[in-house]
Amino acid sequence: TKKTIAVLPGDGIGPEVTRAATQVMENIARLHDHEFVFKEGLIGGSAIDEKGGPLPLETKEISAASDGILLGAVGGPKWDRLPGANRPEKGLLEIRKSLDLYANLRPVKAYSALIESSPLKEEIVADVDFLIVRELTGGLYFGEPKKREDADGETRAVDTLIYKTSEIKRIAERAFQAARLRKGKVVSVDKANVLESSRLWRETVDDIRVDYPDVELEHMLVDNAAMQLIAQPAAFDVIVTENTFGDILSDEASMLTGSLGLLPSASMGSTDVGLYEPVHGSAPDIAGENRANPLAAISSAAMMLKYGFEMEKEAKQIETAIETVLADGYRTADIALKTEETVTTAEMTEAVIKALE
Ligand code: NAI
Ligand code: MG
Image 1: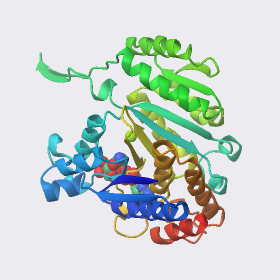
Image 2: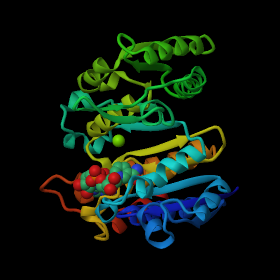
Image 3: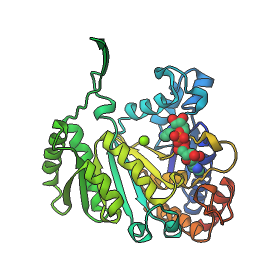
């Protein structure tokens, strides 16, 4: 099978970890007689430097014409003082919006080889394996009006939290479909005791549920969900929630399994083109040092194969290779205990490629 993949390395460690991921994909292609064509595009700070804006037209075109987008990370101190419209993050927001990538999927899974490095007790994290489905293009981050005004000596700032039923429906459907491929359990997270948008969320999720009678549904208030994620994370299968709650809960969940350097994500929309990226940022503190953990980016590539290309077997092969290298004791600095020896980005990548065979 031939697939065209847009590769947007971005800033900081982005280029290092996306290179690792494309190397793994090249090897998967070789082993299965696929042809993966990689097309690189600029995004974020590096695009601002070279093209004057965080999402050049050429990058948009490469992305829209691809079968899947692999992104590194954007941002860094060099661009922190630019005005909002010309910041690296704007490139990411724009590409999500332009491809209508409304569903952000974040799997959180405990690797048995790393359980001792979790901040929580072993028996609590041992069976953690869930998927957060976060709404990504609506809610508080995009709601209008946003405004700020000064009156009677006070400054007031307003953000608007809006959801339409159509937006809730499509994300709920994603969650129920994902649950069917997993353990068949959805927890929908909201704040229906105080927010009108959450009451609409809850009603709409209930309506969609009618088409998925085989899936179990529970509603949970977000404050309780934040607690349950620490108290009994292994009880979750699929969590579906709105943009802001999902942002916070997914960062919380990322700590269950040790390092940000392990966690992949996928953003899917109304077209077939999904965007796959590690959850972590550009890690300017270790950029260019061959120290970054490439496993989050490599797992993101596996998600592209699984969700984007329906290459379940190939995806599984990558996931198994990651488990193997971790079980064999390969550790980049972010996941090593003080007593453990560490490997570089390139060495970890090599090890994964070897383990594919
Ligand atoms: P960050 O995720 O870049 O780094 C947080 C900490 O985790 C750092 O100590 C870093 O060294 C470490 N880390 C992250 N990824 C790692 C990896 N693969 N291997 C080893 N260690 C890793 O978050 P931070 O520091 O808040 O943000 C840095 C820059 O990244 C900022 O400009 C921020 O805006 C941007 N950012 C971009 C994101 C994206 O492109 N999706 C997401 C989050 C932040
Ligand atoms: Mg976040």
